[in-house]
Image (cartoon, helix red, strand yellow):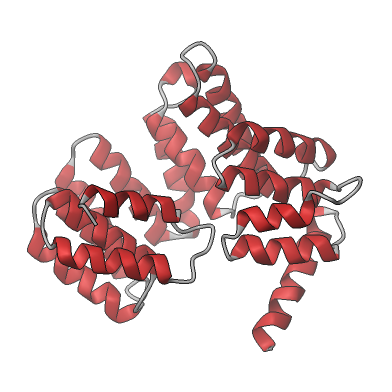
Length: 287
């Protein structure tokens, strides 16, 4: 009861901050969205006449999570036009443009990629503390070529800004930069420093475990996964990433199957990998 009350208060405060009032339809649809029931969330919202920015944004997120990036873009653009100061809307519109870039032809992809970057930058400008927006912008800078606004210099500057607010996260970002530069010893040290700074965060163990597995150090990786399990038993990210590491390494496949089945039965959220990814991994190993 207390958790539900706190959620309702948080949603009301979020709505006030972004300039829209919470509606019964939005509240119900958002609860379904958080349970990853995106189709049913849409079913609640679609009959709403004259949807406001909040409903348009949530519909866009539903379509995004269902893999319909064209419709996601359409609804998120409408939401952004009605509330241009909402960093979350800018972030999701950037993600939709990014997926359009990944799935479109070579002639239209650069335009979508540039739009994605601009939306990520806008989201960060509106809310520099938004970890998801900063992370997506960092990934864009790190992966995109210079003519599309990417560049390791921009990624490094952003990593330095992150380090000022969250030293552990700053080291994680620097590890990604060093890994891209093939400076693997330095990348490992940054991940270890991040873990030392945040020893109660299971994600820090997972990050280092995945890195070591990639570099053939399976025994050390497994020990770190076990430590993460001790901190966060049943954590969906841990279940998925550990199974993925085993499958990529061609080992412990029975355990990987067990982990993926546990993942599919876990109470997932939109921040977790979609069930289709776990199902694809199971298919890959003949499960």
